[in-house]
Structures are given as structure tokens and as C-alpha cells.
Length: 280
Image (cartoon, rainbow, N blue to C red; front, side, top):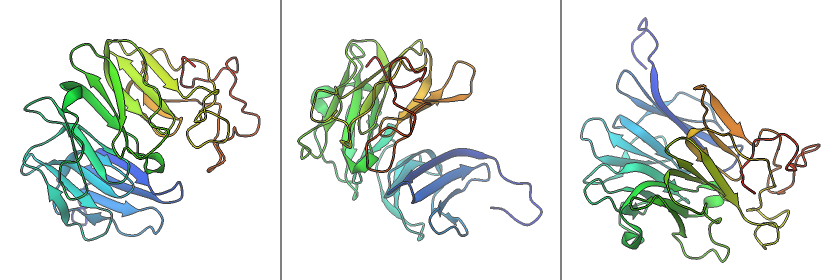
């Protein structure tokens, strides 16, 4: 971006998503007032979006963010046209995708959860769980799970927006006092104000938690004692640790594509020193 001889821009926001592990799609905003996207499957020149965005949120099919020019939420499709798919009349707080077709966030006026489809039309009524202070959605395997933190007591509730998955979302951490949440296909992590983490998964005794199932996560030792800005995919979660550096867990476990099995030599037992989702 910029003219020849200009100093390289500083990127202020970057997100990545993909239809599969082999199809990454990347979008980034920079200091010269542009948001660029490019396809990792067929690398080429990045294409600019018609509007510069902040607070990017991506799914395998869409990228959304807050318009720098108008201060409203704008969404774009995964193509190289750079033209907006739709825009809302306000900027959603804590915006996140769920599945392939749902985009959710917090209505800044009412503090309620608002989810829209790929045309920007409201989908599921979540007012019964409002007001909330945090929201996150799962995009792994396009399962439209969304989890929210209640403003009243900091409890976490998760729902399936499509209401078609017989398994439903992973069990949410119990208790109160949470301020943030991250959900993946098989795990939910809640963060408290002091950075303390609690992560849960499907029990191994459940149909969902059986080895080889897409939503199963292996047993790990507890997650880091402190992390913020946590994000989760399937069973893997990352955040910013107490030292300011990125930290991911479990760090001793590899997942094969679609097998749902531990990698060689990574049995993921509770005493193997890994930092995986707990309290398992």
C-alpha cells in the first residue's frame, strides 16, 4: 500500500480464517487508512476493501469490522471485488462470527446480543440472555455456536444459532464473575477480571467427547494461570500471557485433519506437562 518510496505501513489489526487448514484467508488494516485482504491458497496482490475497517472479525466466508469513515459495522464477502456486502446502522461491540452465515455482537444502545445473517438481517432472538458484556462465536466446521457473558453476574451461556446440531455447543464453564469468553468446536474458555481462566470440554463419556468425534478434545493439564484476549478454534486456544507475549495451549498436542486423534507421542494426559484446556 502507498506510493513507491513511502515507508512501509504499520498494521494495526490482522485476522485470518479459512474454509480448511489449507485455505487461509487474511485481512489486515494499516496505518495509511486501508484494509487489505489476500487469499493464502492462491497468493497474489492483496486487494483493498472499499472501506477501511477497525476491530476486524472473520469467518471462512466473511470479514466485518467498524468503518473508519462512518463508525458503523460493515461486512464484506470473500471475493476480490472489495465491495461491501451490507452495513448496519450502528457499530456492534465485541463482534464475532458464528458458523458461516451468522455475525453477532453487542448492541451498544441496549447491551443485548444481536446476530444477523449474510444479508444483514436479524436472525435469532437472544434478548432473554441480555444484557451481556462479552460474546464469541465458533467458526470451526461452520458450527454456529455462540457464547455470551451475562452482565448481571458474569455467568456464561452458550446456544446453537442454527438449532440443527443434535450435539449442541460444548458445556460452558460454571460459576460467575467471568468478563470474557471464547468458544471453539469442542471447548469453551472463560476469563475472569484478574485473567484467571477456566476451560471446559465435552466429557469423554459423552457421545460428543468420544475419541475420534469432531468435537472431542483430549484431557490436558490446566490452562495458563493468566491470559487475556483468548481465542479458541477446535480444542486449541491462544491468548496474551502475563509477560505480554502470545501463549497457546495445549502446546503438547497435535490434531490430525478430521481424525480427532492425538498426534504421535502426544497422548495429552493430565501429567504430561501440557497447558491445555482445563479443568478437565
